[in-house]
Image (cartoon, rainbow, N blue to C red; front, side, top):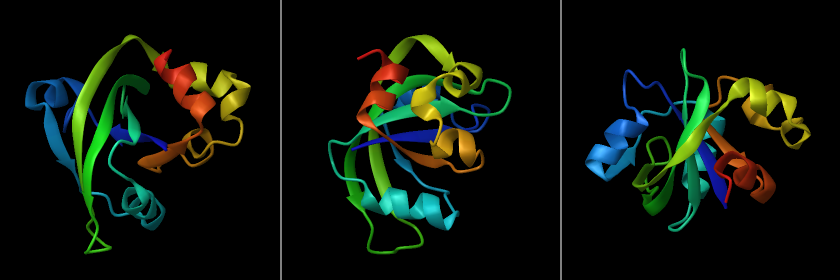
Length: 126
């Protein structure tokens, strides 16, 4: 499965993940986003998306482990992947029909978004 994780770069950026190599993704409170975190499995592929002024997909990561015994605070350990050759802006995403029904454009405040394989490939170029 593939997911997009949104983060405010002034709080925790992709550059921070590159420096740290791994981190625990937490601080999520939206019930739908929490459901997506709990559904993650080791090996799932992730796209890291900067919110705020950037509004663009900037890099990749993968899920190392998920500890979801506390359903209101799942602990998802992720490891850095690669920086995207060119950030993919929200404007580019909105213009692509692959994302017409995606929560990425329909539920702008959702911080954990599932991605179809074609959407992941479009964002990452893989």
